[in-house]
Length: 127
Image 1 (cartoon, rainbow, N blue to C red):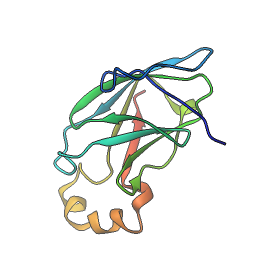
Image 2: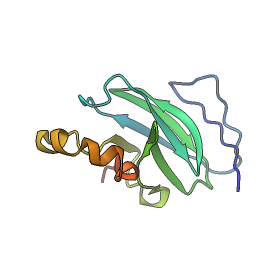
Image 3: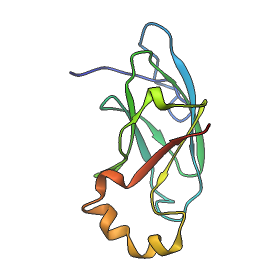
């Protein structure tokens, strides 16, 4: 099932919204982290890459009313699916899973780029 979703965002203002119905505005926050500091993340909505999330940035997007899940992507690594129904506020953060702890930042990167490639990124919604 292919969906065409084009979003107007602050990072890509040339895209337009081509979806009908009610939409949800959210702000994607990517905090400053040492790992991936020079690499961009991609935001995937229902399997379609839609926008670029730059390091240490905030990007406002409009989700279509029929969107089911969000997913972060960097190279071959992704986040688990984050379902739209689980969004608790208008702010959603995307970051790598091991950046907050120096112990895991030293020991686990090899795991996250191989066996844990589907858990490399983490998406969370504030309460």
